[in-house]
Length: 293
Image (cartoon, rainbow, N blue to C red; front, side, top):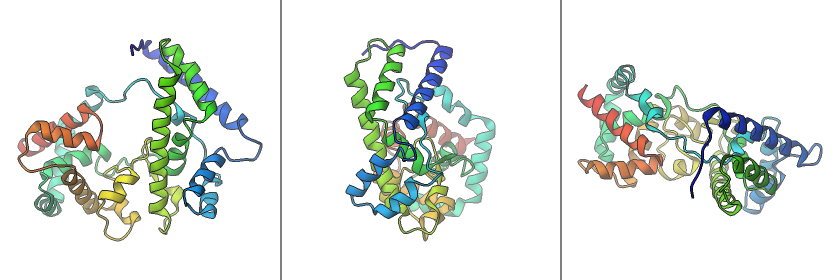
C-alpha cells in the first residue's frame, strides 16, 4: 500500500487535532461519572481477574485515559538517526564505567548464558541508560488506553484523521492494525495484573515507557513472566542491576543467542528484543566499541 507522508509540520498539526478529537471521545463517549475503562473492566473480569481488584485500579483517579496513546501511527519511530546518540564518546565511556563497576556480575552472566558482557551492557545503555530513564508513564493507564484503540469511536476518529495523511488508506487495513495493537496491549495488561496482584508495591505508582516496557531492562510484562531473574520480588527486580543483567542474558539465550554466532544471527536474536533493524545494529556496534575502544 503506497503511503504519502506530508511534511513534519503538517503531521504535527494532524497529530494535535487527533489527540483533541480522542480527548472528546473519552469525555463524551461515556456517561457522566463513569470510567472510560468500564468495558475493559468487564472483559478482564470475564477473563478471571478479580473484579474488586480491577475496580480499585481502573476507577482510581490516577488511571486516566491517554488519548495520545490511542493513535495508530503510519510511521515507524525507529531510524538510524534515533540511535546515533548511543554511539558517542560520552556513552561509550559511560558504558565502560558500568562494565568495570559490575564486572563480577557480568562475568557470571556471560558464563551462565553465553552472552557477551558487552552486549548486555549495550542493551542496558540503550534501553534505560542503566536505570536512569525507565519511563514516565503510569503502566496501567498506558496499557489500558492502548487496549481501547479498537473501540468503535476510536476507530472512526483514527480513520478520519489518518485518511488526511494517506487518502489511499482503507478502513479495513486500519481496523486490523488497530485491533492487533489493542489485543497486544490487552494481553500485556493481563500479564502485568498477574505480576502485581500479590505485590506490596502500589500498582499505580509503577512507571514504564509509552509502550509499557518496565525496569532497567525495559521488559514487557509478558517477557518479565517468561524470562526475568528476580531476587525476591517484582519491586526489587525493577531496581536491581544484577537482576537486569541476568534477565537480559536469559532472554537472549532463550531466543537462540550463542557465543561466537555469526553477526546475522545475532541481529535476528536482537530483533526479538526490539523489532528494529537500527536497534540491533546499534547494540552490536556499541558492544564492539565498549570492547575495543
